[in-house]
Length: 123
Image (cartoon, rainbow, N blue to C red; front, side, top):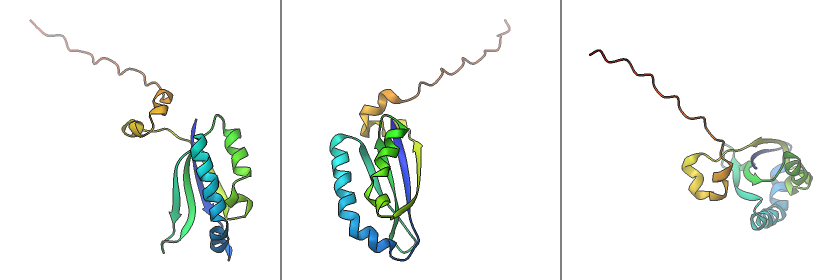
């Protein structure tokens, strides 16, 4: 199942410097997750001055418990860069399914539209 992870950096002095110091390990873990298929896409959230202040990731895990287990060992969390993290189930909209064909089968089935009622024709 896909999840969107929205992570926010702390605001304490030194957080950005700590982010940059541990970023190679964070990126290496992302590379590993891309190889095993658990990380689809992500990027940094920028503040008003263009400085990274968080991140958004689309990840693929069987359960929310697996997401939480991964987060327990995430470099930015262990090093107190990310201090607030939100996780939500994520649905790929139809116009982007060609980018993620694996998830076409996971789309919810929509109920068929009801047939419009026709007015009787006088004759």
